[in-house]
Length: 405
Image 1: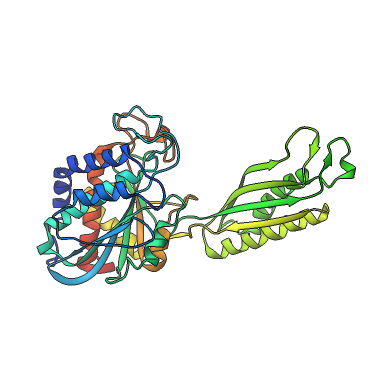
Image 2: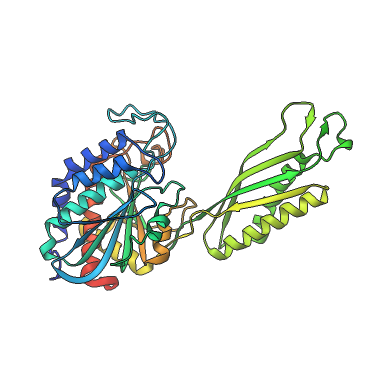
């Protein structure tokens, strides 16, 4: 521990001193949210807040994402800390004085807080640069909400030279007890793939279905058959979720359409179950359609992979957070969640972990608080200081002792 900062408790003190700046940056980002891979106003706010610090900035052609590099006074390991910057295409229905000024766009998943906490962590670590042996990479990433921003930044070479030895990210949870942290080794979040099925028949008059090949009941049968396939052919200890969220077909009440369309999502917790369900859905849809003299065109768009946390990295985070806040602040999750995260791309390349931070709004019961992706989601900003301190403590511990820390 002599090579880096000495007292983990110092990080919480530093984070509290930076809290006004953290909140101000979070609110500025929240009020002016941006979508997708291009978040120029957001990254400009970040870079302005970090101006004058000993950081080297790297960016690429595919996104407005950037990596800030802090090189310590002496050589050592390299650790990456990540914060995502993009918002969601949805309205905001809160009464916050800094609510979104962009119609139909809202920071409803906490990326504004992730970015602000990472920026303050960069300020805190820069202040102790002379005590650091190693390098810290601060990854400010757009395009997490389905746009594969992490993958684009990796493809642009922004995680090369230096390549991190470990990577960590925080994600806020408004409907979890304020100030608590949790994670687990192995699968933390699911892969997410988009499923589209077009069932083609032969249209005609709705009063004479025997003269047609009606694709609508066939599409409905495919929905049921897929659920039977999942429950009968997928190992319950390697689970899969398939949800058909939209059925579309026809134009009026007395016309049988030529085609009916299904739209849904596929979630899995391993590449093995992912491939099994892909093949099974195609086989079931095509088989049911053929039995009714229809055709089924199955298209699966691969989304984020499974988010796999390295057990050693989870241990580093747990010990760092335990030293900061006490053992009661940490919970090891009993099971993964079926949401998806594109930090998974980073964890495919670098061992690491994502950690959830509870930020239930003050005065609310955490179980009834609005979750992420709610148009009424709010959070307890006081908890952001704990996130800043956690970033710093995790980086400190890994740089000092690697996965043995």
